[in-house]
Length: 287
Ligand code: AMP
Ligand code: ZN
Image 1 (cartoon, helix red, strand yellow):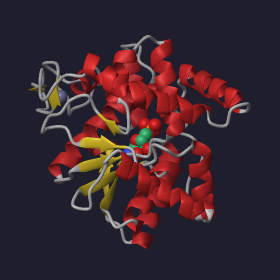
Image 2 (cartoon, protein in one colour):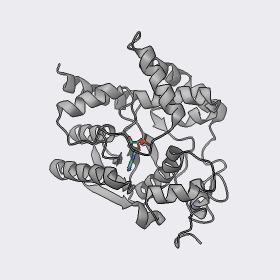
Image 3 (tube, protein in one colour):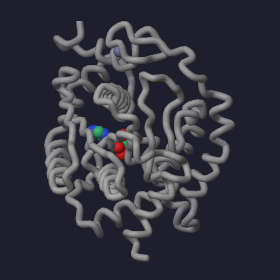
């Protein structure tokens, strides 16, 4: 079997193994314009799933413009519907503008702030547009890094929300997030998209400066030299203990969930994290 066929069939097996998706589901792929989510979108579409894409235009200068152009061209060529959410229209500014305002008041790293906004937008749009599942491009490397980082930071309770099906809360306000590339290495995804000649921006986000993540990534890649299966072993070990981790930390059903006083989105606190951050930004949208 050729590499591309084997790769696609591995994604199909992952979906079946973890029961990620059904052919009846209306699925939205969270598209960054990068290789992982583009590969996920392409393969799900090829396998006959009912998929559409959603890009949040973060307005991070030229990098976002290229990402947007690439995914727009890709979806047009493949005949896949693409939704685009403009961050300025949604939240009153570009990611750099929002972030610098927030960081002048609180000490949060770039990826944390971006992740909070992206999750909020994705969930809200997916639910309002009637999607049953959100598929992301997370691969083995992302998951292995997250497992190790939660250990190093002693935040293993957060790991309850990881795994092939993400999210700690079952609640009608939250759309289930799934990771079809859960058994694919970063290097394999790159090989796949290169062999497929997809128009992809391979440069990482210019704002992703999480020092801890970079150190963990470097460490895992060094250790991987002597053990090709290292990252897969970390993830496989993690998925074996995941039911116990969830048992310990996961809330049941809609336990503790209420609606944000400000935006009405589901949250565990009176005001959701997104609204708390937006309150720190001096925009007209947030009073
Ligand atoms: P990241 O948070 O950048 O590590 O990306 C993780 C996953 O989130 C990607 O594989 C995508 O599925 C999704 N994602 C990242 N950036 C965007 C974006 N700008 N718009 C929509 N989805 C995104
Ligand atoms: Zn809110």
